[in-house]
Image (tube, rainbow over the protein chains, first blue to last red):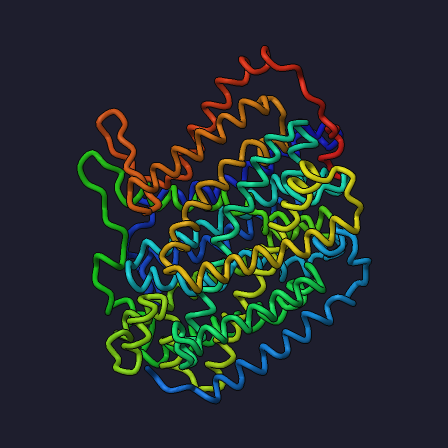
Length: 66
Length: 514
């Protein structure tokens, strides 16, 4: 991306988005039953949590690059 | 067969009546001249952040998703949850790439992805390949929406596959065809608001009521056998279920916004900011999809297919009946009517947008480009209206005459085909380094190998790639895309030498914030 008009360095924020790629695509990390939360295995609640983490990161990047 | 559930049927019919009225009334909403393709096919690009949220959410999370993903969870367990990482990963892509595409399309009045490709690469044959891929990948997707509709009609007791069920399906489709023809994209935009609210209510109610009834999430998960609860741990020289899970999520995410209906939804936004804001707001739907996927596990935990009243339904629709059966089992009839209407209307919204998107592609990139160069704006919009009817009735006939298995297999192939347009559309948004003829060669290689991989695996989406003594089972779409890119990169210098450079109508500033 060549956004030369914007303040330098501002596009580094986009790298934050990699967190959700690593967090969801590295399957061995979360393919386990424990630690369970309220009876829900880790595999399920972790991925549901990642929905919120992903939305949060996307929102941060949105405001940072606005 | 189960008896007709009259209360549910009446609520369902009332809600359908309401959205029919809404669909026609939408023609007057944010009024524009519907004889212009930009107005009929993109709603005049007038939808702000909130309407775009409803429209794109109603567009991407289809009735078939709500039926098939929980059905997969019901039948196969944990692997169905790939839908969650998949719908997490679409939003960073939306935030980064699509504001650029929105800006350049807005600036040059592009209505389809193929419009952009011809402007960017000046090669009408590459644009034709993009347009044909889009139309062909969309048709089975529309047909699958009908499968979703069939299942809820069956759940109402109308016999999804008997003559009564078929008549109901035909009526629903005539309604859909009529309001799409008369109101264009405004109809699904207005109806999406109703549909999305109903589906949120249904998903939340189910995920609160059912665990309480069963005695907590712990009991639900305890009832699921270990081999279904988690992915199988790979052993030996294979990455096993891990690589198929990850590649299915990533490949599906990359393919999703290349579908014509996604592009139509995004291009109808009124501003670049509306697209960007939606990248952070749309994940609410992913959360809901996760909840709905859990419904499949709940249905399994309750042993719903063993209950005598649902045996016929499961015989007719297999595990696709899991969610309707669970709703029938849990809720009073009037709420079943609401929930089924949410799914049924959830079939009409994407079907309408898909048929509009396919019609836009046909009109702009086949009819005007190859048959009638001097077409007036009015002729263009009239052609698109007719085309939207043809596409829909093609899908209807397909579903009525052929086993739904064919539609499911074709939709799987559709994902593999549409991802082959990624170099032209997504990479094209950044650079035109890839030669258009080299891209065309890559596209062909990708389509052929992807189709072969899927067919060789008996229409299972994952292919066991053998490399250096290891096996990497993974999504065929991603593997064939890799081959597509390699061919395009290798051939680019050759074609650059052989062909004269083409013209780029777009300027770097067109992609940036105005």
